[in-house]
Image: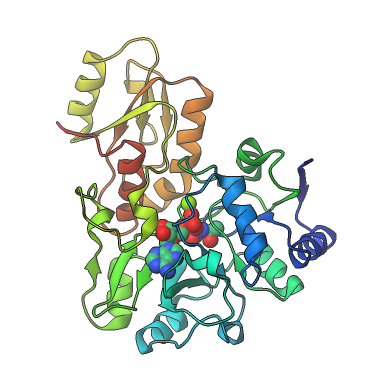
Length: 339
Ligand code: TXA
Ligand code: MG
């Protein structure tokens, strides 16, 4: 299959909508990361997403809508807390798990009785949903296990020949996938941290939220994931990544002691010049939003440069930093050295 990468404009958005209505899959930009979209009503189309990504069948997808009326038939009900969160954060980078409705294809939910819903804010994503008139199931547009793409060229690198069309909407502003929260159980639980923070969600809900165990730690043998995606190896570049937790001087000393061919640093802005190995930076030390925006791209650039061993600076683990750490610790296969 020939893959066309084209600027998103009215003509290409309409082309994408035609393809989606005909049961095809299309890569589209969102404010978080690029996604591979298919009609959430069409099981055969959704299957093509799993094939293109090499994604395990038991990992469910997020359904993207552009207005509340689209929830009709997709969800069985909208829990009270979900409505409050939607009012506060939609359109935007928040996904809410709700009881599943009859119109959503089985393949989207991977056998669960719940469905993940998000209303994106990106104008291109919204235009494609509006033009097709379809709710779109869309996981991140990477090959399963790799870092999510935040520019159209990175989608092309992973998906060339696997889908017919990629819409280029420029670099994604958020850079990490949406926050995933479930209100389907007894207590609201954060399943995946993102740009909408735990603190912000708690403020709207008026109560504390639980943090799913898999957010910060590797699942133990026999422990089940509330969010199936959390059990898989994720965001991993080819290089072996280790997080070094501590101050810059201790980091520099450790990297100096381990310098050698193929060794790279993944550091904060302005630190590279003071290190004895080549580096890629991912935002300023105190700027967790910039770290989120740049992390996946930085991991891909390290692979392109042929890095074998990467020592990463550790982000703060609160606010948006929780999302940054959650992705980085998976890229590092949970290997963290305390300095
Ligand atoms: O920002 C995003 O959310 C991006 C863009 C494209 O919108 N999409 C995205 O999709 O990150 P994906 O498939 O890469 O991640 C979906 C996550 C997975 O961890 C999956 O297990 C979880 O959401 N999920 C989906 N449906 C679920 C459900 N019913 N219950 C629990 N977790 C669910
Ligand atoms: Mg993903």
